[in-house]
Image 1 (cartoon, rainbow, N blue to C red):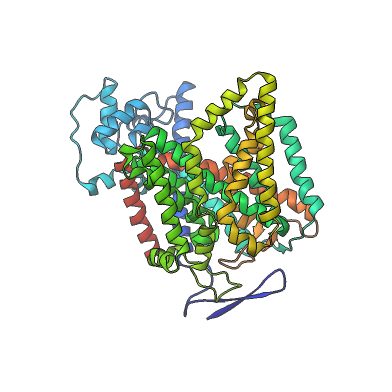
Image 2 (tube, rainbow, N blue to C red; image 1 turned 45 degrees about the vertical axis):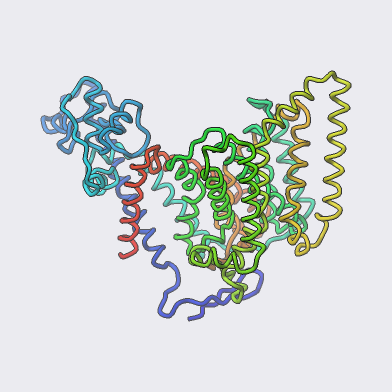
Amino acid sequence: RRVTHPMVDGSVVVVDELPGASPPPGAAQIAVFITFSVILTLWTRAELAHRAIAAERAASERGASPSPSSSDDKKTGGDGTGAMPGSDSALSLGDVELGPVDKKDEDATAAGGDVESGAKAARASRGGDTAPVKPIVRVDEQLAKLAPVRCLLGDRRALIASRDTLRSWTELGCVLALFWIADRGGAVPDAEKHYDRDLFWAIFGALGAYGWFTTAKECRSNAPLNREQTEEWKGWMQVLFLLYHYFKASEIYNAIRVFIAAYVWMTGFGNFSYYYVRKDFSFHRFAQMMWRLNFFVFFVCLAMRNDYVLYYICPMHTLFTWAVYFALYVGREHNTNTNVVLGKFAICFAASYVLWEIPGVFTAVFGPFQGLFEYVDPKKPNVDPMHEWFFRSGLDRYVWIHGMACAFFHPRFESAMKKIDEMDPRRRVTTQCAIGAVTLGAMYWWYSSVYVLPKLEYNALHPYTSWIPITGFIILRNLTRGLRSWHVSLFCWCGKITLETYISQFHIWLSTSNVPNAQPSALMALVPGHPMLNFALCTALYVGVSKRVFAVTNDLKVACVPDDARQIGLNAAFAAAWGVGAWAL
């Protein structure tokens, strides 16, 4: 059937629904609702159990005489299992494989792998039970020992020990509910976007001035492209990126394309630096990176009935992270050979050329994954479902390789900057001025020849020229020791939550007008008729939620994707089984 959705700008979007399908909520949304309802129930039980134990302990400290039954409960942990003395909740996180564990418990758990054997071994290491622990090999028994399974079975010890993790899952569920209420439930009206150039730049200028005068701090390192500097870089670009969306500042479209290219450049730079220097190609580290990029967007797609590529930043960074990983993983024993590394860069460039430049190759490679990468804007229903993915990923198809090359030559760049710093003042200033003049000249040529082109003409040249402003910015930002040694902490903070602010903006800052897969062409209007007050209120809510999502994502990463490939596999098996069951219901 065909469903008509009026948009805030007066246009009408017609969305095709499958025969017999009902409007949202759909099957995926119901599965998400079931999942988080169960999690909320478990967290509530864990909180009640924890408070009961805390009350008993407080009564005991006041000299109260608890009843024999309650005394027995304290000795047994309330469920017939032995409680560990000295633990705040009569438990230790080492008793369950969920969340952080201390070193002794980690070592003990690594031997046997299951929950109970880890607990017994931990007690033995403290001088308690010294009985030998027999490792469990059967996968079904290992799954039964998982903390999520024990929680579902009502194990009080597991519930209390998993209390913080359950709280994080519950908080995620609340965020998804907030998204749905604001952008799907019709509870919040929409407002039109209006662009005012003076207001746009005044907001950014005021934020930058406040950050400079109140949060400027010295970097922990004065090396080029240090951590604080790259976080700051991401932060101020993200602020402009978000303001561009909020005010529909179409005149800076080409600059936004450069910013996105810079993010992709950082994907190549950061991942190459890690794998090349640390040589850590472990499964758990790679899985943790995939979790960081895709955990939140996965649940948002399910809850909001949106396609993955609507949030194109996530699949794009995922793709290029995979590319960097495998480029260095293959033949990793030869990564110390400069010629081999340069050869890998050439192969990556050639592969990118073939994939995006030769007609038919992109479709052949990604065609089998069309269900994952397809996207159709409801306003443009006749477009090829794979066009959006081809367009978005292809715009930055080479700049990630430039990021890897910059990471590879970074030690030489750092050495050159140090040599300039050590020159006598007159020669140093002369050299820095010469470098700055050449760099500014190159950037001016790019600006006057490429940047000023209309949107479509610029997009055609962007894949081949985006490296010019990025390289120029890097040189100018690191030209002197003073420039390298200071950063604006406010923008660093913004840079840490770029992924969360990018995803959240669709649903609690902007609005997709209650249309699945629609672009956020309207604003969320908590205070209709008062645009500046609405901007301030919505921004405070939006940034606060994004900050909490960042914290929740990291907390759950520790619990669900630990530094143990076997444990990750068990957690993934449980998640898959639960997902199938919830979908079936």
